[in-house]
Structures are given as C-alpha cells and as structure tokens.
Amino acid sequence: MKIQIDKLFQNTILQKEEWILLLSNRDRETIDYAFIKAREVSIQHFGNKVFARGLIEFTNYCKNNCFYCGIRAGNKRTLRYRLSKEDILECCRVGNELGFRTFVLQGGEDPFFTDEKMLVIISEIKNKYPDNALTLSIGERSYDSYLAFKNAGVDRYLLRHETANGEHYGKLHPNNLSNIPRKQCLNDLKNIGFQTGTGFMVGSPYQTKENLAEDLMFIAEFKPQMLGVGPFIPHKDTPFSDFPAGNVELTLFLLSLSRLLLPKVLLPATTALGTLDPKGREKAVLAGANVVMPNLSPLHVREQYMLYNNKLATGLEAAEGVAKLAESMSNIGYELVHERGDY
Ligand code: SAH
Image 1 (cartoon, rainbow, N blue to C red):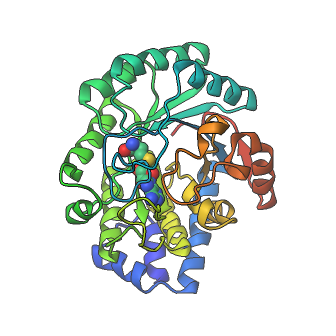
Image 2: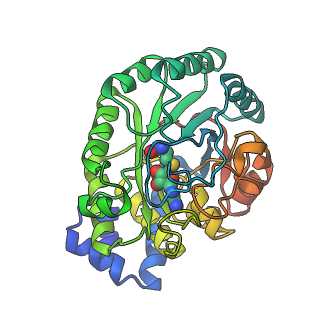
C-alpha cells in the first residue's frame, strides 16, 4: 500500500476503492511510511514550526441536538454559561499577553449572540488587537451574517462538515439537521473569502471506512485552508454514551493522509486526541499536524464546555501551560511559534 502513499505524495488523486483499501488494510509499515512522508511535506512547507491558537469557548448554550455532543440542547445536566463581552475581551488580553496572535471564538449555536452582538464583540477585539487573527466557530449562519462578520474583520471560520455522507449525517443528527445546508455554509464561507476550516470525527457511531473515504474525497474537492480531524469520544449524557471512542492510531493515520492530500493545510493536533492519549499532540505533529489550540477560556467555565467525557482544558491544553507545551514540542524537534500563521 506504499504505492498509494507515494501517489498522494506526488499529488495523484486516489480513487474511492484505493482510499478504502488504505483505511481497511493499513499495516504498521504503511502507517509509518505515511507518517514519514506527511512529516516531509509539513517540514517542506512550514519547517519545524507549530502554530499556537488561543481558544475561547464563550458559550455552551446550543439550540441544536447533535447526538454526539455534550452541550446539545437536550442535555439538561449541563450547567449553561455565557461569557460577557468584557469576559471575552479579558481572555483576549490574557492571551495576547501570553503571546497568542490568533484568537478562536467557539461556541454552541446560541441565539443570544445575534449578529449585532457578535459584531460589537468582533469590532472591539479587532480594534484592540489589530495584528491578531480572529477565527469564529459558531456553526451555521446565513450568507449575510457571514458576510457581515467578514466585513467586521473576522479572518477565519471553522465549521466541520462532521461526515460527508448524507445518510451517515442523518444518524448523527436529529431530522431538522442535514449536511446539505452545512455544505452550503462552507461554500458561502469560502466564497466570502474566509480562510475556511472543515473536518470530521474519526470513529463516530455507524461510521464505515467508506464514509471516511468520502470525507477524504470531500476535502480533496473542497480544499479547506484548515482541517480538524479528531476522534469521537462519548459523552455520558448523550444518546451515544455507550459507543466506543474513535481509534487513536486511525486518527493519526488520517492526519497524515490529510497532510499528503492538502500539503499547506493548517492541521491541528486536536484536544480530543490529547484527551485519549497523553502523547496525542506530539504523535499528531509527527504525523503531519502543525497547529495546537490551547484553552484560553476563564478557568471556572472550562469544565462546562464538556463536548465529551474528560475533555482536557488544563496542562498542555491550557493557554497558561504554553511554556510546557513549547517544551513538549521542542522535545520532538519542533518549535511552538506565536505568529499568526495565515494560510
Ligand atoms: N457549534 C459549532 C462548534 C461545535 S463544537 C459548530 O457547529 O460548528 C466543535 C466540534 O467538536 C464539532 O464540530 C464536533 O466535530 C466536535 N465534537 C462535538 N462532540 C464531540 C464528541 N463527542 N467527540 C469528539 N468531538 C466532538
């Protein structure tokens, strides 16, 4: 199967059958070869740099009911919180002081944060920190909302497609959600000119190798500037509480395939991977990832943004632990950098 890895390395498109073969029959030799080649590509484009983003989880209210997600509307056991504009600006102040030059505002789909409210927050952040990149990850909105955010200075937008296959999407979400509007949002974001991120979970319930092949084919076609690939992890108060977590090794393999497929993509070592494996971040970087996103949210709300069981928000996942994170990167020969790291 090294042939397929070499093909990817040479920018040759793989057929669906080849993707399925790679994912189903992967052996140690192929996986290690993919890691080496992926690393070669990321070193070629980024040297040994890993970009740091400060993540601010500003609301865990959500109107949606995604079956996998711990902050789904139907989870009555979650203590809900919203950060005020002042809280958010304080996170930015601390983050800026710690050296972060990208802020990522993420939240549930919270109707409280209307476009008007978001625009005020965005303008204040961009006024105070004009040199910093601002990324939003607040779900599906209208074209006009996205355009207004862009005009107010938002640089990037993250919206994972979750799974490219419509039928599989239907098994992960209630009937009022479909991946057709979600993909439309992704097209809108890209057309408006955001650096656009998408992505998927590995090992989500009912996922087949064919589905993963479809995810890879979707990103090959969409060509996102950023890509989030992390393992599914069950949350105890969701309908998927009894499903097993995704496989770490398969996730790492998918990261390396993603790097080969999209040589310049900004590819985070996700928190979910760090949650399943204490060495997950390092392993991800060695498989081609080049972004880490430590948590900048106020300490007292961190455990309320619980998307899945045991989600990390301290230690190497915490912005205040950035020195340790830099050390862990340097131990594997990489340098944690604070530059904006635009696509
Ligand atoms: N409301 C925003 C942000 C969602 S949370 C949006 O709709 O885009 C960010 C990501 O966390 C999701 O896109 C999903 O892929 C991931 N996530 C949610 N629940 C998860 C779980 N149980 N395990 C792993 N990842 C999960």
